[in-house]
Image (tube, rainbow, N blue to C red; front, side, top):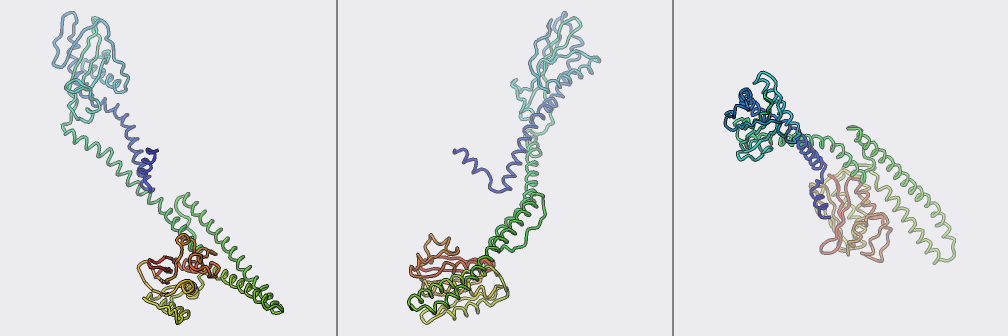
Amino acid sequence: MPEVRWLRRLWPRTLFGQLLLIMVSGTLVIQLMSSSIWFDVRFAQVLEAPVRLIAARSAPLIAKADCHAGAVQAPAHYQLRCAEALPAQEGDERRGRKRIELLLHQALKYELGHAVDVRLMKVQLTDELGQPIVWRSLFGLRTAQAHIQFAVPLADGHWLTIDGQELQGWSGESAWALISDYLLRVYALRIVAVLLVCLLAVRLCLRPLQRLADAARGLGSNLEQPPLALDGPQEVRQAAQAFNAMQQRLIAMVNDKAYFLAAVSHDLRTPLTRMRLRLERLPDDEQRERLRQNITQMDDMIGQVLDYLRAGEQQNLQQVDLDQLVARQCADLATASEPLPVEGQAGTVRVDALLLQRCLQNLLVNALRYGKDVSVTLERAATGVFIHIDDCGPGIAPGLMATVTDPFVRGEGSRNQASGGYGLGLSIAQRIAASHGGELLLYNRDGGGLRASVQLPE
């Protein structure tokens, strides 16, 4: 529905925004609900001064009233009427009305010196034209008048009805000054207080969540990272404890899998060796050569599996001159047709030299196998150290770019149908880069070919 989608756009995406919206909305709703209670109390307070003034002016009229003697002269804005029975009252059951009736009874008792049976007929705040302005009058937007009608019994059995009007009590301040002061203190200050509370609450709550998120992101590149500290609220400690338990289970699973693959790969070489010995006894040279090739392929595959398992292990981190390491590797693989030139400088980095050498070897061999005009560029930037290997080959199909570094995924379908390999070369390079806190980046170049970049932290 369009309304639902519109509301979803308004819903904040951050925890701070959601918490702030909930708390501010809740504060406003609670304030409006409490305002209904405040209004009843305020309604009586606003009328307190007019009620006392009406009682003071009505007491002499009640004391002198005589329905048989004729009309009694009343002050301005007052009307007196005599009736043989109690006039009908309005059905107003508001709590404020009952307070005003009680206040009027007490005020008349004080002015007359004795209690009288007061029946409040009507109470209303009106403007100059007699229109009710109850809510507005509370803020003083317009000049308000208190219109009160009540009846008291006389000694001759008649009921004297007094209908009087007096101005509402006034502080003399500007109406807009009162409104601004009310909105500032009641709403603005509360919203600012809620904002500060939200900032404090979100900061306290998000700090352990941020640590948990950082640990989860780092888990992909380093399973052996230190466990999370068990501090903070109980719920956060439970989440950290569950995360640490998950990390230990993942480490155990990976170690079991690596141990199993390494053991199987290592043990397979024993029967392969026996097969090589028995091949020499075969009389058929053609069959012997075919079996020898199959055994060699199996041995190569086993070697790559073992290299992949060892690629994620940092065995000897030390400061290495990256310029010399890359130059030496390129010199070993260079030929007359592919000189492998090196440009730029990167300085020294803290790496495992043997693993990084294997990473570069896999990337250079791939570039030489699938492309031509291979070149290497070293770069030291603010985001880390880069080793760029460019070739002028066919590149990688865009559909395979996201998965070409996965184990046993081969990209030669887009580069060279006749090539061999087992789909572990780029996987080993990616695993070695990740074990150093970096990554392997692959891009198809605009002019054709592929750029393989190894990013390492400084």
